[in-house]
Image (cartoon, rainbow over the protein chains, first blue to last red):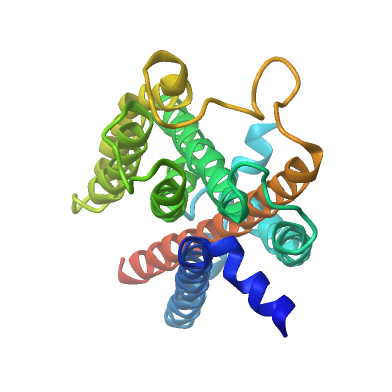
Length: 67
Length: 239
């Protein structure tokens, strides 16, 4: 137990080390969630658009014409 | 070579195939890197345990500058050759740049207080990184400022190229001006001035952050391409 408390204390610098690592983890988490969410939203939008225009699908997917 | 991957449809296919592998590699590298950074490395003889902040601060700083360089190169390609994929790459990378620069500024501040005795100084290194943060925000704002996305992309590309002058200023600020910030200890011409026990976790975390950036970039570019294709489909349906 003492070992864990000593470790968590970070040589008296716990107030700086843990917030730094925590904020890094938080920012990484936010970037991951927003990126994955935008991918999911875009896939839903693409499926909806494909359903709306199935007859044009082949043309719109031709290389180089879709962006 | 570039043209092979510059085809949006082909890029999407390749990205889909790479993503599971890069995601798995990112998670594996983070587990190894965090183990080394938190448990399998000693405290610094001078700074004590605060050295552990370095394992997130320095890789984030490298990525924040590499990300901007990437955006500048993509902007040049977009302006010169008008490749739609280059614009997509640039605007997909910018929010990641904001995130990494934010990590640099906050962890640097939390590292500065116990080490230098201050949260912030207006010296060249810290100020130029703050400018980098605002350049990223400006890039995102400009991208979305126009009804015509192509005009937004062009304005943002010009900003990215003009703002690139800040990157060498950040890199060499610690040599050119007096500063509290220490000079480079890894990326220097002679051998790194840093003990292997501390260099190992640093490089492992840098690799993890790089893989993470690459994975997020692929995800965001795929999302952008999906959106563009959906818009094109809706337009062709409305014709």
